[in-house]
Length: 115
Image (cartoon, rainbow, N blue to C red; front, top):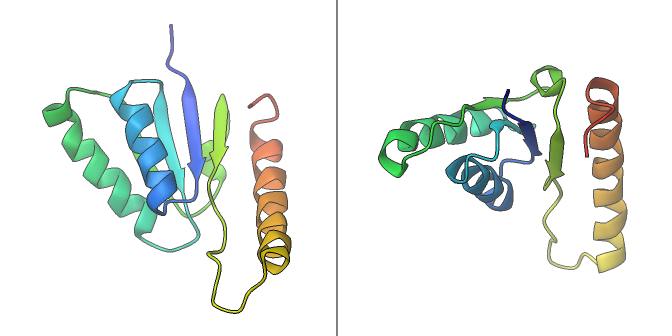
């Protein structure tokens, strides 16, 4: 039986935590995606190196594009803008809705059966 492929979009604190817990529980192999160059790669490397110490062998990789997400079984979207001073919740909602729409389109193109 092959492992599930889990994609986490957004490698900030929430996304990295989701990826780490999924790896710890060996729920599947993890693809961590973020728009900021080097962030998902570095966090994935940290998780891979922690695997032997923490007792898991899930593969964890980081990318800045969506190509590696193809064939994902599960996708978790944690990407979004943080709320800035003076920004209304409506402003934040609109900005993050655009991000989720773009991410969803990229994921649907590569993993149409993902949940």
